[in-house]
Length: 284
Length: 342
Image (cartoon, rainbow over all chains, first blue to last red; front, side):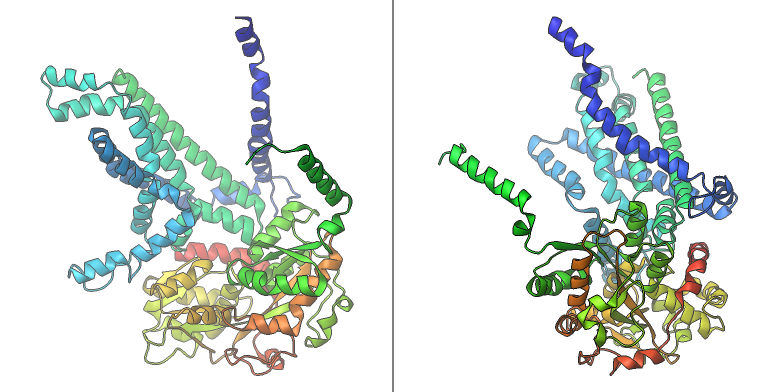
């Protein structure tokens, strides 16, 4: 009892190393980012809101911000469409099949993001696997343009981000008591009714976690966006990179970075609020 | 076998570590130098050729940090006088930025034995050229019956729908677009004609890609004509890619890749030894050969047939650009390119 109290009393001391590291390597750089965004010149000498005003008043940056968030939403929908059924199949599969499925699901995470992205160039290219298949089947007479299109980027991001959707879903679904499904069936509900009234509501926490992870990851996926999307598709991470590392306009880069951070966080908060309200509504 | 450390082993190890700390020169021969280097072929070539040559000639170890030119400048600016490497390797744009931001030590060419082998006027107060670059048009000879001969040809069929474009992020991209602009009536400070023509043909352009991705996109057949340098053409060709370099009628654009010593470097003497090794005729000859294709600057090197010049003095007749005029406009051009192509 005394030992337990002593450990509880010293809890803050045990947290201290992590808290200090968090302050030094996360909070402090974030503060610097906000401070630098409050300068007007690339030499970071004049304080003012000119950079913010020029960013906010330029319709181009509104379009870029909108496109970045749109990319996140579309990737979430695509991963959800493939990931949810996959998670359901996983839960109903035998242990041996589950082992194979989990290997397939986590496979994209075992490869470097650069390798994965360049592999998609080979797949989506004019002479890539998809176009060669379509041409040989006679479904198209000329190669389709898949690279440097939003569709191509979403296809590749869906594969890259799929584990972030499926793993939280599997984690939550595996905690659902199987007897609730049996109870639903025993009370006369069809399989679809059981699925929509029992499985989906109980898996909502995993669904929200998956959507959050995929959204945050896809909106900031600089390598995939720039290599597969090319320069025709401009997203906020590209603007941050160009302004910070090519033209060295760090205030504008900071403004773009803060915009990305705030807009993505805003969407995530909104997603979580909707998720919690839904859970409350469904009495989960 | 016992996994325990005996007292004798412990004392031997402790003595070795203490000795290494007390007499670092014994442990590290004649010291080391840390240099930034472009990723890819440059990094590979410098590890295989320059590092052993430097070790052999000066007993100095070479540590390489693969970084693009813009990343080197960004790191040096962020380091604020405490450089994370001793030497830069840069193209003219980032080099001009480095000079303006006082990121380089004053350069003393008298420290280099090989400085006399360079063309007159190439060494300045901040650095020295270590390789030449030649920018022109690259095309796939199997896809076109005749090669493009002018920059303006690239905006005409059959080249247009197979064209790969890149923006102002890189030196070769910037100089190529300036040459494009000149072909349509522009100048080094006026790229409006390029944008006006681009607007008319934008939808037909095959690829508008990130500079680093362009060789891969060409290799994959995503585009069959692009602007690039002779080194990229040589590397792709050596990998079996169908690619040829063509000098535009208006002339090849050329620039030098330069080395600079970082302001605040603690290994300045070794940095000079390193740069001197890079400039030596033996090393420059090896770097020029496949698979690296780096155009030399040492006039004692017999030039390879793959280069578009027979003699380095011909470079003075090629198109060179004043980056002090380009740099102030580049940020605006990059933003404009984003807006026009997206």
